[in-house]
Image (tube, rainbow, N blue to C red; front, side, top):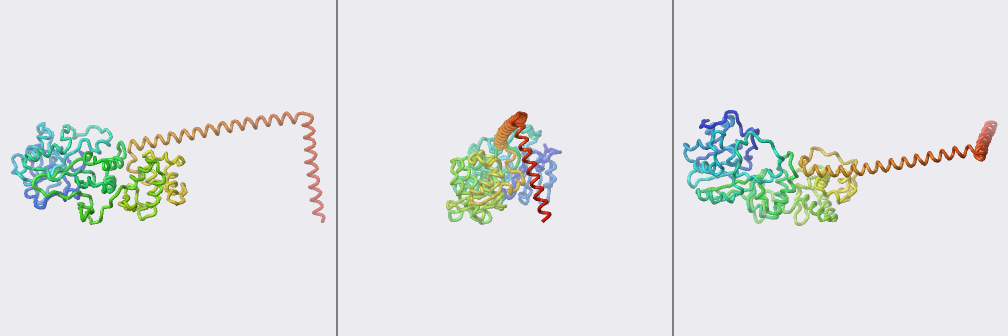
Length: 471
């Protein structure tokens, strides 16, 4: 059943992806929902697969309301301030945040006032699942300047960090019981982020799930650095807070399911152990930064000599014993080496090997460091563009490399031009000298002598031929 409560937007859809990001995937959000949510309000755009049975859904676009309408579900279409007449709810789910709960016809409300409206429809002691955007997250730091969108009729003024919300929610009777750093493809709790052994696995997971597109720099290095320096929670694209009388939830949620701690080791949602260590790409770049080629050779040899030889270096975790654990489907070893060569060139580490000029030659050199002979001409061409192909930093590094290569080619061209001009001048001088010598008396005598010798040699050859035929 669908009801228009006022302020509805007739020609608008937040679920279509045309007016903002897609909602959080149900695979990540479902483990956060309590087992018995009671009377539930789902406020804002959410994955339709996430909606609990019998829930009340609030959306502002008529198109979304029509798409979500179904048996046993109440869909309210309109603005958040129109919910004041509705009975209070036991559970309020607003994982998309507060930014898409109001319409242009709504009063000019601050973020705090919008939160107050949402808490007003929650039962005292109820359960709240709230998404909070981070205006200083990695996704915004890496984004290129964008044109104003048709959703920017108000400016965001949300809290800088969730810390300021803890006291606010506690005063409203909803103390925070769990806080997640929300990244694309993962929700990470504090204990997971605090475990140094998980940094390689988390870095590989977050890098693989980062959406493609143009950006200022490669997010892989920034994500790895944020994890290493303990800033992954502060620089997350957003946070999710679980507040009130609600289970604390899992320590982390991945696409494969919730992570859990079992006998001192972490397990993924499918029950497989989480490898502890750093990614191979991180270790290789660190060794390159120390200019330690023996360490690079040792890492490459262990990688290419094991079952993870075809897995990209950024998706390989190296444990304390030096074993390589692949986290992605393997390709060919040559393709994995070429991907690492591209990362080394894009990161500005190709200076350790002055010889190679491009990815194919560096791939052959890396293969040689593992004891494998590889002709650069046999290295297959790169397939799909790298995820960081649109990064401004990597494009500038590639431009600087091409500038150096062009300068070397021009220097060689100028050297060859000077060499050819010098040899032409020398040849011309020798020909002129021969002409002058041929015009002198000794020169003519020498020419006569040479001509006589040639004639005598022809006569002797003719006599020999006749003698041979007569015999």
